[in-house]
Length: 184
Figure 1 (cartoon, rainbow, N blue to C red):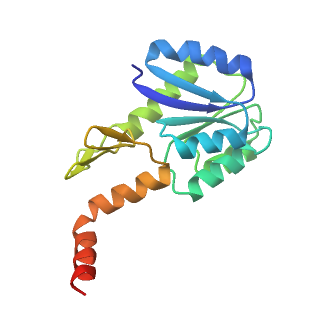
Figure 2 (figure 1 turned 45 degrees about the vertical axis):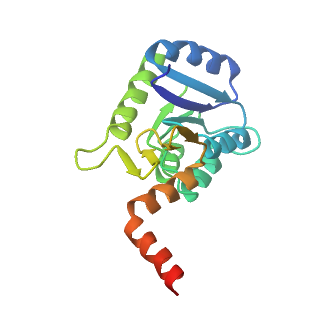
């Protein structure tokens, strides 16, 4: 079983196939899609540890995908991969919320090193922060962005996961509101 799930949004099929094979022995399950619209849908429906995102995509640019992800509350790390290596493009990508930027062509070992660095930074919980939250039969794993009700895995979008965790963390407030509604 893969240790990390990544989404690659890039229309370069040969590159995608090569990276699927290259990253698999490293414990990475790489899902690839070729358009910005498909990528955005996948990113909103599934939980990934990291997204590798090309800037120049058919349908919806990588910048637009990144902007919509961040506006929807997604905190999934994003590594921009693109042939557009101009300073302006890198700055725009980083300003929109990208975690790193790697221009094409690139060395796959450098990509792997950058992916590992981002994953270390974003999936290892801070010592002060809990990795899992449990409320009754409901459990959420924060680094993996997964939730379960009993033994059943919940399929949540990123926005739904954020709302669920917020409600779990603030359960005393939610309980007070529901009790007030029952009494009133």
